[in-house]
Length: 155
Image 1 (cartoon, rainbow, N blue to C red):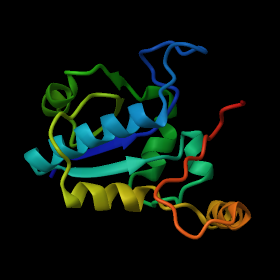
Image 2 (image 1 turned 135 degrees about the horizontal axis):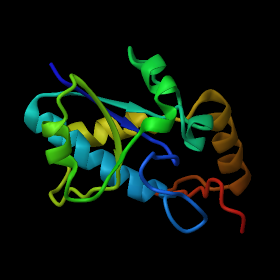
Image 3 (image 1 turned 120 degrees about the vertical axis):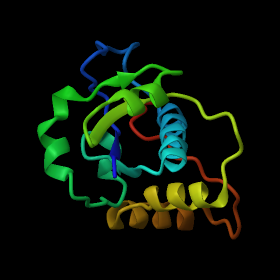
């Protein structure tokens, strides 16, 4: 079975990054992740998300997988796949293990399995969960729908 690893990174090998280019927000990344999730689901490929090379890894529970060392070593070889090209790249890539980053788009509604996958992926680590809990306590609110945290943005 082919394995596709979505590597959440800000350092791709084929796009020069600076303050304007090559740095994708969480929304861009989630969009690409959902796209690749559904491509893998359609093709019956194993799908793994690796966050070790992104600052968000400081806040989320780390998910171990059997390719951690491969992705650690490939840090400077992760390609950015431009929107509209992800499926072809995944299919045409001859290796049994394919890694990539994209902000490609998925235009359909997402199902409950994908929502559960994302919810699990965005589980805060213990330290960040404590921070969240303390912030919520400090807000003196009983119920809420959405609390928005800006990560890495200086306001």
